[in-house]
Image (cartoon, rainbow over the protein chains, first blue to last red):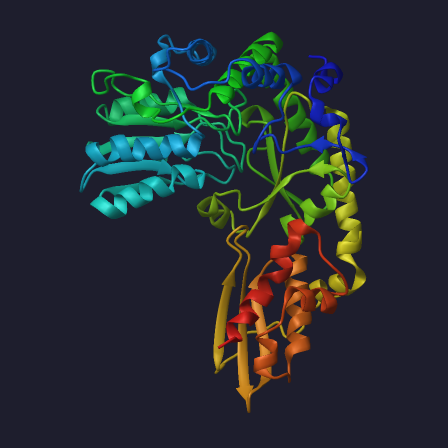
Length: 366
Length: 118
């Protein structure tokens, strides 16, 4: 991949932040959008903006066609054979709540068990915690090991005949840990064959913050009129069109290349950061076991202060508890800073970032 | 960088009145829901004045420094006056304004102190 060329595809990198070139290391929260995607979204609003379905007039027909074509495009991208299995929601949080309300409240009752993990985002934790509190179901939370990976033995132990739902994130938004979906699903099918599995797929690089979809496999016979049944009201047509365009953009790059680039940058960043005294890195040291996410702390300095000082140099990182308080508590810290990488980042970005970390230490005299 | 001026860093390194207080007249817990930072203020009153104040908490340099500086400032002052303090007052004591993204951090202790308003 030619990163210089990719970077030029993204208009936001023309912007100066505090007088400096933007080093964007917060793609795990939301990724930047290339001009091709932005143009197609603009084109929708300029040329055929209308509400979808039910409309007879030309614009509505055009919008409906584009919306449904986007659904088919996304289905192909994520490897789903039937586009009706793709339900567009505002974001992964809404998607999970939709499952908790529409499916959970009907199918999970007192004494049933829900299995999840301690590395979940609040979005995939609170809905199940609340459901369990409401109807007396039991929520089992699987811990992680000292390397920041899921404790497989504990996971297997948590599964049983009463398990109705097993839900876990594909990639931890804090640790970067990639969960082996195939292996875990096999265990579920073996030990709790009747349980449903739900994957929170907000983090892998093929889904986009702000325009996320969630692939949720539901029994087709249970739900008629998929997918529209769950898309009540005026949908985000422009968002769907943008998402489909993003699928084109990524397929052109090749997802194996995107993944390879992620691993390379994470490896490089971990190597550089671990050489700075006082910097603590969280999650698997082996970059092949994580997404393009590296969470860290700089000595006793609070993550917000790290983020503020980096921002003054044009470097955008995330800081705080990352909506994953149970995990952050488990790690024994109050906050973490997080750098995440994507297709437009290169090693120079990481060098600037590492220089920024040294500056943090200078400011705080540590 | 101006946000991390000497004054603020000194208080971060060596926060004043940073301790729990036994037999406090009032204990106020304040949480910043955005980041989870929290501060607990302890007050002891006498004749309408703040006789003693202390705090504990877990937060960034800005919120810790703000709490430390504020605690020094309000000690001995009238409760009625302190309860009416504003963000502008905090800027003045901190020695200047704070970047918009960090206002919540700077004002977390103020939110706690505002509970003194009856």
